[in-house]
Image 1 (cartoon, rainbow, N blue to C red):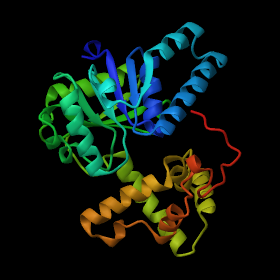
Image 2: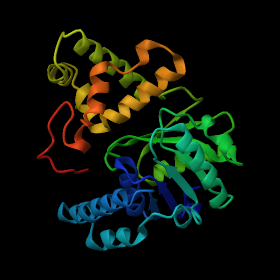
Image 3: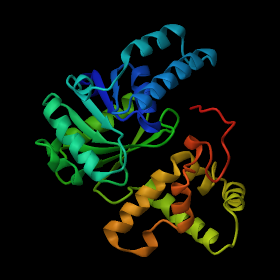
Image 4: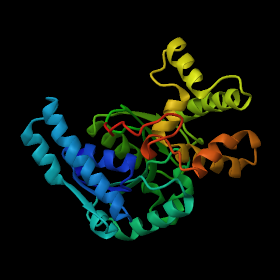
Length: 293
């Protein structure tokens, strides 16, 4: 199936989108990365122009491979330019249902009829988006983990109307990108990994709220005693405090369960702009830490 996919469109040039785009170009796909923000696109292009030569310096890719990958990687403000010839679309826009539905409606009008439309979201299942298109059978979740250039697992989730062909296309695409696809038999909020992660985050938040231990002490304990490569608060900083807030707040609004609401100290951090690594500060200080994959 992946041999039929030659052109990939990634919608959203943020932390997830620009890494997925770079990966797709490395793996041989003509790749278009699009965003409504010129600043975000410039940042994405700067990342690629730094990351790709770094692969040569580290002996991971040859100069010829990097040159070819860079020639396949395009950045544009135009959704029509990015999607009009796409065989496979990966949406990595903000975790907002209205934004995603509007995007998928546009993609449905722009993309070729054979294109697969995948959302990278783990908090918004594809069945909430699919009916914004005239091709609900071609819509699915394809959830990468950050950093997408490094993390090996991709969760593939079919909605009630997703076709077997679409599910297989997503699996084949994941394999073509060098990832290990994990297929869920049916939709469930937060899928596999994040459901387990969120249970840990909620307990970690509870320990901080009760003043049992600091975030840093909890991370040390989890990393040292459980063998996790990162504790829960390092994970939040890496993912984005605002992203985690949005996911929990969205679930709280859906369920009305106060246990699902983000704690006040997380709300305060978002209001203060302490969003984790991407903002230079979160539960840890990153002001002197360069971005890398």
